[in-house]
Image (cartoon, rainbow, N blue to C red):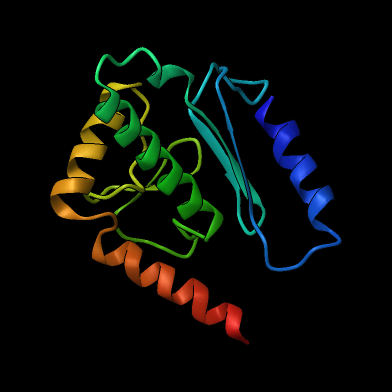
Length: 144
């Protein structure tokens, strides 16, 4: 259960500052309410990522590209993307996600959506301008 894993991250993090935890597993994960998914994250805590659904991909480079994209996506959530204060180009779909062409879009069809996002990441860049600005705001707020 992904929620249990993320909750355990919070407990282990209490004694250590300035770290995030990322766990990558080879089995399906879920949240106990919905079917399997490829990742889950808690802001400022960490992420759990399942590569299980990508192991079926024939091409090794496609597999790795999708895994990199999912990892970047979940780390984006750890670093506050997409913020609840955002009003444009945002959709609620198992959490807030960007609607622009960037890795913070939601990928519900696995592996198809993640293949497309990986291709877009390589072609257009990792984050859209709005997500870059949101990320900058996140890190600037952590300075104070």
